[in-house]
Length: 169
Ligand SMILES: CC(C)(COP(=O)(O)OP(=O)(O)OC[C@H]1O[C@@H](n2cnc3c(N)ncnc32)[C@H](O)[C@@H]1OP(=O)(O)O)[C@@H](O)C(=O)NCCC(=O)NCCS
Image (cartoon, rainbow, N blue to C red):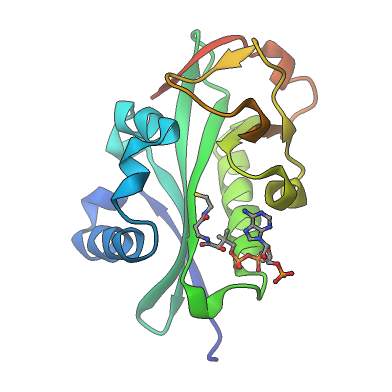
């Protein structure tokens, strides 16, 4: 396999090629079910220009991607929502998913975010330091299995400042 290149992006909808490649990857490997998820509702609320993340390419082909959505939680703008994270099947189990998350979190930190939240499996996301979000503190605009609502602080104490319903910004 040739070495992969990773590129940060901001507002992918402003670049047709990037947008089309990401849409095709999601369509092929996640499918329309993603639109029904509560995390999607949050991303839908947000302005597309605020979305940012990291893409991984093998030559010209997009083979992995992670996005982040800035959040507004009762007026607090210090958190972002990680997702979707996707790696094309031939590239899985080689550490690319973890690398994309780590690079993405560094990108988020450089933008001033202090907390990363996400909906996913703790077994996987604990690799980047995620733990469960205490029930009743931060809420999502729809149903979510509380065991899958996760997050971690990039600045000590930042999670304690958050209380209320998440809104995509
Ligand atoms: C989840 C995903 C991004 C991981 O990408 P990756 O490049 O394979 O990730 P890594 O190489 O860092 O880690 C792979 C390991 O994590 C494990 N893993 C993957 N998803 C997992 C999950 N949901 N729960 C627990 N372990 C998981 C894999 O089995 C693999 O284990 P192995 O190393 O023993 O083979 C990839 O499997 C994927 O795109 N899945 C479909 C989309 C998806 O579920 N996205 C996440 C929710 S939006």
